[in-house]
Image (cartoon, rainbow, N blue to C red; front, side, top):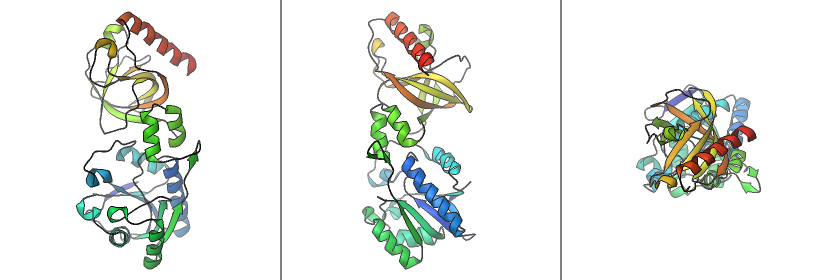
Length: 304
């Protein structure tokens, strides 16, 4: 799969089919949209592609760093698996933000990417202050001879699958519902950093994680997880919390990997959330905490 920066680039090799959107999470709705784009691209004889902004649009529009479900690197791999052949990257800056809907389609999609087909979701908005909707996009498609396809929503558990819906589920620790909406487990990426070494003293050495991006963090508690290290997957228990038994005041993400003793300091690892086990609670002493941790590990072994 090619990844092309559009800063000084114009696509003149071939026509393209383009899926448009933020695609945070690449959830079931996004997957349906991309699969539709790939199928239609084959019918038209053009290249299946995505247009992605390098940063989230809200970072420019609202001057805030939004919590994300997937970073761009993860999107690239997921998109490739769905049949996307090219990802075009564009800086979402003040100039792009101020383009009208027509200018965006004409100057970016048509002139820079040579778009012949645009596929979007039912709620797609574009142009300055999100003034353009799918009806306007269809009109522009007729004007500029670009095929437009609008994809209906995906419904799971009577809810429209969307990135905001999934972010809310993650923040509530509803891991099973998240898996159903994403079509895969939710995961975060982080670097293993030195910690307090308390886990070693308790007999449960943990990997302390520093996130590499602004991922949505599940609610505090203990989770059954998979930890992926160098493409190897290990069963693990992950605690997100403040270490209340030891009067901690900083949110930490710590993972105990079963049957594992390698030194992984400095490595980037991925943690897949499989299920919620229990809340993060204060114990009267370290002995009670150790007993509960032993029960957590037994639960994981017996249930999963």
